[in-house]
Length: 250
Image (cartoon, rainbow, N blue to C red; front, side, top):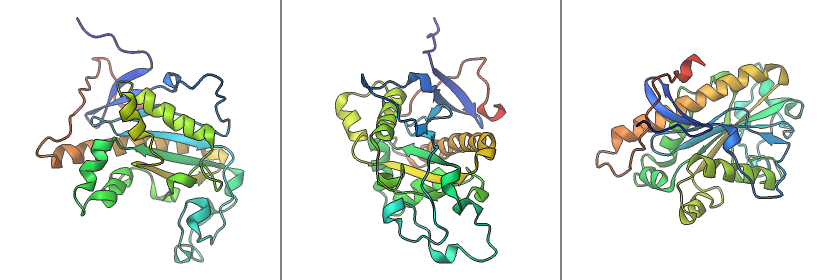
């Protein structure tokens, strides 16, 4: 007898490889919690075969990004002055507080983070490559942000932090409290990327952003399956239903 699919969860194919999607209705919060209206998830959460989590978050009241701002201590975004040149398209760095900020957020399980960290020539650069290579259009001018400041120059806001925690719990409900605590360590193995856009482009930007999440999961799963020759990491069994559509057609 086939196992009944769980509500708000599905397995779909991206470029022939399975990934799991979790609808935002699966998110649960502590009693009395008011979800921060500044932040919301516009699309499903995506979880790869090795438990890497990827999702989009929208900040509808982003900070003002100054054109030649070079001090990432306050914004969490590093932009060197030489990257902002006369004649260069700098539209995504102007009047950013009048539009929205799209956050692409990736969370690595502790064992996957250890797998990358065990090779000093891989580590952070390879994680960044998996998150970004052939994912989001270059014209989005996306940059990596510091985890502690991705939700704004004042640092983490409680509403946004609770959203991230809810995403982890909904994505991997089988985790016990000890493992959940390891995921929840302040920003550890969490990789946010930000880009700024006008509201008129919301539908297009979010569509491209969600496709990029699928592409990044494919990057992680393909890389790990190829280089984990000793099978240190356990692969999750993801079986799409017969009628499952490819995410590429959505």
